[in-house]
Length: 432
Image (cartoon, rainbow, N blue to C red; front, top):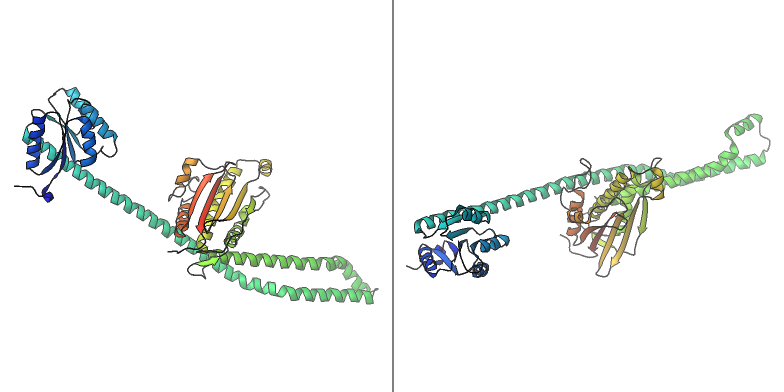
């Protein structure tokens, strides 16, 4: 009765230079439902295995050309065939030969002359083991993928919650500061006019009454009227500059969070970079114990870009914060004079690319990283910072944000021993 294709139990490659052995095994295995492939030498077996992809190989030890041991060794050296179970067939009963075969990767031995029932039992056991191993590998792969998906979901959840809270806080602070600052800024102009009127009145009084009453003269001497007249205009100008500065900070906070906008926007990315730098200004400016971090801007002429502005601002924040962390960590090991002679620097360069895209490069001259680590920088939870100093989420989230924008981000060491991150995104795109 012919065997249907659905009844085939698997493919077995029989490798033997003895035609009688081949015929016997072919008949026995075919009769119970195995598909049998034949090879009469080790060289032929290495070719057949590429075509038939057998589930098991019955391999004779003693053959002309390359023997069974050498054939097995080559099979196990190839990643495409190393997992196929090999059972040696041999008349040799020497324990040393059996140990040699098993050490090369064989799973069992069948001793010649072959006892059919014993051979079939061994074949069934090892095929079942192979099926169980495949099933286990599939389940392991599924569990690994599920774990990776869970890690990614955790990354998104943590970072989204973090950025949402940060954005809400910034928007709230900007809103609360905006009203009093606007009030102060709006009243500075009339206040300046009133003060100028009073100063003009005092000057007119002094011209009309060059010899004031002694009590008035004593008061004018005590408050130093000449200094007051000279300093008040300067004071008003300082107040005006201060209020303008606060208004810029408020605008930067609102630009960074952009919670009042939904979907994509067409924006000037330079504004996003500058808003981020303004928020980080307290970490960049000079302090009594540190000369500060220098900024080098090399901005090109960029077109407005269609994007999610708050998400790109988040990318800028992550990269710039990491650069500052690296520079601060290195500067802790340097003296003040060394830092002043070789200042820590962050360079930002932007340019328009010929393929309707833009590029933003952010580099620092910090301690840098080894080139082989660059490929790991965007993996979730990977960090080069000391324990407790970083979560390893920032750059992985940045990578996904840039991918979402249809762009790419990569890093490389710089000649100054620092590191440079380059972001490329299209000017116009369909965003998901």
